[in-house]
Length: 448
Ligand code: GAP
Image: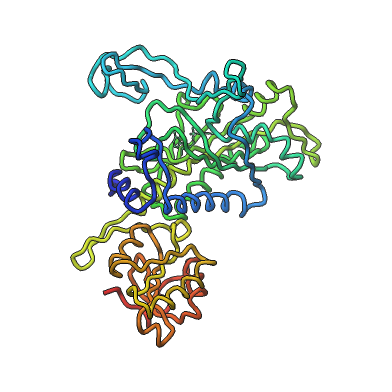
């Protein structure tokens, strides 16, 4: 099934509704860099929180970590990134544009057809220098993955957490890659956010755990609303495995430009711990006291991009429909991901309605991310909330002043129920946990 929305519509919605802006826009922008606006920052935070909840908080075999972006340069020699984290680069002899040799078809420059140089290997790590005097400063790198911060802390975590294997260590944070070809909005950028889990297991049980994590991660996207038919699993061929991987599966999503990687789940074996032990001179193993045996654990690594997940959630949620001759654009975002959970909308900006509407807003905002909007017509305000995926709008009308009741409108069905203000937060809490909206069919009507 083809994805039903093209990227331009997503980019334009993101700009229009304050989700994502081009970085440094007033200076003409900076290639492949993006800023998250007021709605985008909430959406991104919700994606991170949903991952952290599923991976760390809801399990007793995973702990969290937050390591620094700049690390000792020896880390990248040991991990193989200095030697092997490279892409083949070719340059057009006429227009001087640079391309990834393995990502272009044919022999000429994709832009002008000009002759291309022979490929040379280009390291994707960003270099910078540490120290006040440039000549004496040491060269360091911005991390291209958060995983290495976890490997070099393996012993610290094992000795302080008093946990047994299998044990996972999770981290969310920025990574940097000087990608040759960027593009497709926030799909591939040079600065992005990783959500990585390194799950340490006894050798011999690694294949079982790889299967386990592939299923867990696939199900996570489905639980948060991505349609199964837009996801697929793809095992890497032997020739495409990263230098550290024994086996790897990609969870691919059907993006507008075609099937592309959303997340990778790799079996890294004992590659990283062995390499760091060799380069640092510190022993990095595990002693199983019950079995009285010592071994170097294998690692299963589910590694996802926050930004790429945000993009997939946006694309899958995007919808257009016609209501009584008018086009409605909406995001069917899962309630856990929606930037705003509840919008409080007085029927009009009227001096009699405003105090009650503010009272309702003040009652809700400590418990839910709530928006207050009293500008423009109620229809336009509903459309605005639909476009950012707000699951519930609460409308205060003149009857509310008399009966102390308000109307809740549900985004997807457009059904409405009228409820007492006193019970509003309890009812919204239940609905935001997934209770069916038509629980009170007597009250339910469809928006006119
Ligand atoms: N530690 C393993 C690792 O980094 P990867 O397949 O290179 O594996 C994992 O990256 C995920 O990180 C990808 O599936 C993607 O979601 C995200 N990612 C990688 N490079 C990215 C980039 N340049 N821009 C945005 N997201 C990226």
